[in-house]
Image 1 (cartoon, helix red, strand yellow):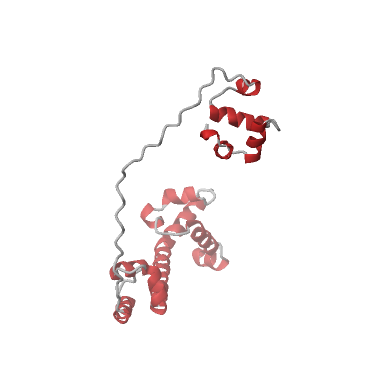
Image 2: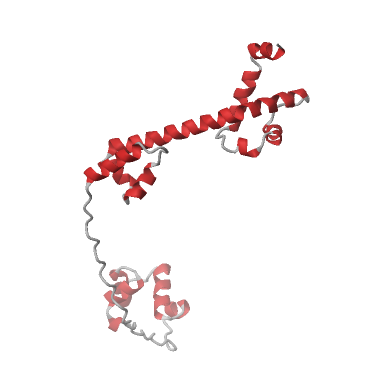
Length: 209
């Protein structure tokens, strides 16, 4: 095997060249691990190898690997660098800031065909103003939802207490229409605020009148 070259054979089986050299010269015996590697690569059994009985052993034939003519990948064409007019982009961002309904930074990027991260990098002040305006819009919307749901939550609590029950989410959901509750981002917190308001002494006095 390997044209009798011990160095090539050692590289094939993954052991030190000196191990194969000493073994061939009769100056040493390979370890069991090395012997197993020799047997596995030569096609001989471990018994044949250790006993030196290679009368029935046939040198394994190495089949040359076929070369496949695979198509070569086409080089990727680089996209031409896009030049942007940032003065015009900032004018458009200022226009977004006065829209009747605020928009998100992502939506602004979509309209300008620019990644939102790039807007933060190149037009940070205007982009942050857009983001803050959107957050404030969401807060106002949530406040409106709470104001709309408040009388329904109050009446639900009063009815539940009148029946001698504890106020739970299940009891409230059973009494308040889903379209009223759905927009609330934190129903449990809003419900606690309503109960605290109803249990105030001044509210009980007004209710008694």
